[in-house]
Amino acid sequence: MYDFVNTSLGWFHLVTALVALISGAYVLFKPKGTKRHKQVGYIYVFSMILVCSSALGIYNLTGNFGIFHILAIGGISTLIAGMIPLLIKSMKEEYRVFHLWFMYYSVLGLYAAFASELSVRIPEKPFYTMVGIATGIIFLFGSVFIFWKEGKWKKYFVK
Image: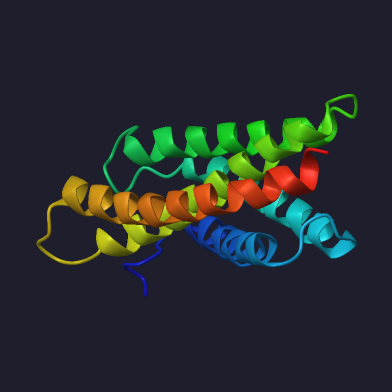
């Protein structure tokens, strides 16, 4: 396990990522708008802020600022975009669909990062090819799911 995570920042990143993976899955698959959804959702948001922030300080995979750092910035961006419709109370109800879109893509990004992290650990495989394949598969299936659910979201929020 030493080769898997070898710094305290790496362990912090791993633990907060696991919290985000679990809480993110919960909010995706459980009913929306409930008190529990909101509670677990805020756990997800806080853990994602910690995951993305800690990712910006980890350089032992490539040795310099790279694709995972850029994706961490993208993760923070989708998280912020997903929270804006909820934090601005004067926004119309239909803008809450944007909350769902961006939060689903935030979780997809997290799962793509997880799949990429696992796939680059396969010995003697091309790094960027593995990251691309893992990310592409997650986003393909996730996007199909999001487009399928969008009609239901609009019926719920747009009255």
